[in-house]
Length: 173
Image (cartoon, one colour):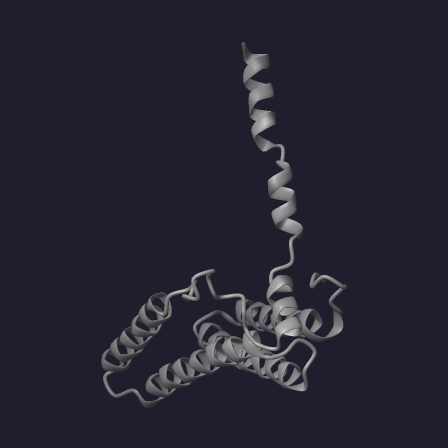
């Protein structure tokens, strides 16, 4: 009886063929190919010509972000540094999302796409350092050093992933 339970548990942990295929499938490969072949964005259009992705999730996300930012500003009770941090974080996140949207729509291999990749890396780095500064300020010095090391490692890892690793044919790294 115990042997059957162990075998059943092992079988559950084995990755299926579908799981492995999904893990190695390119995220933007098909979309980039459709843009390169047609010259315009075809990935988000159904057979009937309607949009596959609704604007509602994006609207709700930005509404939630705006509501939380406004609440944080009100709760800061006039603390200029806190208001500045919230405003910077909000503007940075909006800029990241706009750059990512433009990146998705840009032609694969274009200079615009390269500049947008640079902008996203800079914006995410700035946001990482801003949050690291807030966290490190309330930590004991040894922990603050670790926070800053992790922040620099994160930004360096982003640089490596964006600019050093080259995509193979098919869109995967």
